[in-house]
Length: 356
Ligand code: SAH
Image (cartoon, rainbow, N blue to C red):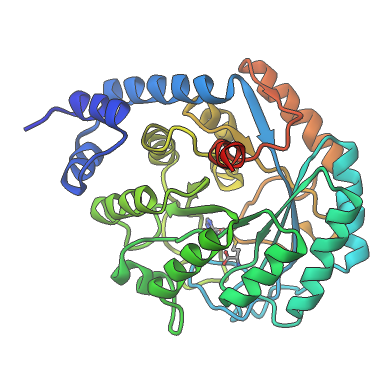
């Protein structure tokens, strides 16, 4: 049988492991192996991006949601969530502040809010692109029909984040009630790719029902999809969900998987997520040292921050955006990194543009 060290070396060189090999790596890795993996992943990220970290300004523009995902604090059945929806004016004010702070990507994230017509979201995208033509607009608004995704793209949206959550069908049904299905989630990701979005997939670490086998499936699905970005963060329980009593996902395993993804997809954009920062005081810095190269500070108005609670104890719900960016700069400097002024398109997308 191949040893763990050999598996890491194989991943580093060939960017591929089989399902059985992933399971072996996940089951058998010891602290020595983790050091090797982290070092290789960090070197790979630095070879690609230097010591520059891309920032994306996250605007949580609605917490209304028609879905009822068992893990999520803004699920439809959470009667205690105070629902809100930002106006176009509110959103543009967030962008204005963000632009001044140096952001060149705005991420509009929200629940699947049937109260915002698709045409209204298109107008929102177009308004941002008109005012800030040098900025990228990323959407994270869940599952839509192909034609709707196309209309968002035509309105000017550049990127789309849609975590696949888990690539195992049984596990998917453990996390989501009907009518949500893995088949549809995956179809959305392929649609988004075919339309021309830079696409982000990903999953939570330690969600109820997750096993080494399902994680191996996640990694193989990511390899097949070849997304431009991969979002990975620990599952964190929310007190008003059916998963309230489940333990949080492990920070160590999250860091380990960030490094695995960095070696499997060397060019990928890999955020050190808010969930990672919420699970551990220096989680985001550790994420960067494990091969991540993106952070997504919150630009939402302070008045709504506490209402966008996907999980308990989410960080940065009380900080002014400017304060948070200053703090981020400091903590990155402490580990030898700095913020990039670039809008941070996927290196794969840039290469394709040059060819065409
Ligand atoms: N409605 C959008 C955005 C969802 S929120 C969509 O469906 O894509 C963004 C991500 O937060 C989710 O994809 C999920 O992976 C993560 N998330 C939700 N609840 C969480 C929890 N309790 N712990 C950790 N991450 C969570």
